[in-house]
Length: 205
Image (cartoon, rainbow, N blue to C red; front, top):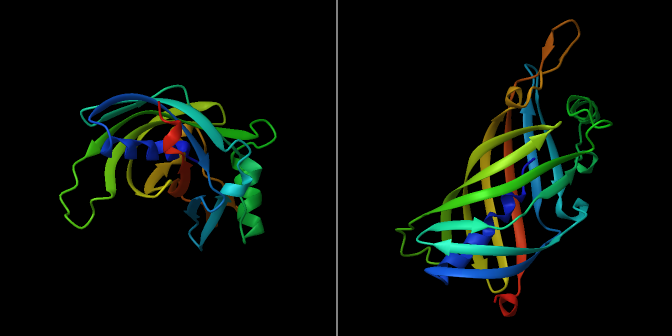
């Protein structure tokens, strides 16, 4: 559900600039994905949305970097709720109902700010770690959360990944039950994102 949390990768630019104001253009690659792992008292289930399901993949984003702080201009990633898939049709159906897909066909993720964490590993000079404050909107309810992430760069490709445990009750959602309460869904969901962005250095101004 989140992702643009995803646009977290732009912090990689901090390895190039101690203080800078730039505009970057990035493209989300099809190999990217966002997964949600939930569970019931009987079994766990996986829902995943791959990069090829994201409609808008190119973003032009103003970036300001100053002493480990990364601030992005207006940015918002819209994810189609129906864009998620699962090998468990029952879990998929319940997920669609939980997120009220007919009334709210999309969920939104907006990156607000990021703080970089110094990397003390001599072997990981191409890696940037940090925490990002992200505003997530689900079924019309917005919630600000902090997500730890790790990002690395190879040529013009930037990979950003991280995990976060989310309580769906924070968005006013009630875990569903079935069979008169015999099957209970946990209120906690593990989010994992793995996003690959392509960036053209010649587009940095």
